[in-house]
Length: 141
Image (tube, rainbow, N blue to C red; front, side, top):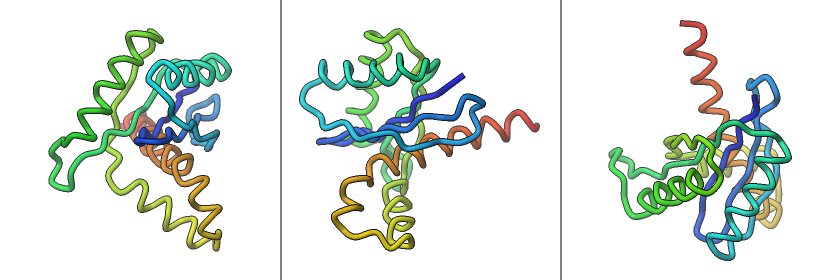
């Protein structure tokens, strides 16, 4: 069982994937968005290549937990993904994942240009890893 993690942005989509056992998330790529059909076709390639059974899509929420315009866009995108790819899409609270991604890259002493190229992929890893950790915790209970 592999799960695809996505960090949906206005211009890019960060992509991550779980290991086959569902313990860890690895960053895969960043899709440069063009239009909805192109975006979904690119995501389909990863779903098929990794034989994913689910997609975890970051849900941007306001700090008070409400869903704003970006969150609404993510929800609509998830619905389109489910309709076209016929795969379960789980929405996952992504608050502060980009901040955490930047912090980890700063700690790794990456240059600004390198950080800019991989921040979305790293954020997708944080989104997916959070979901995987929750799954693991639920299995222990």
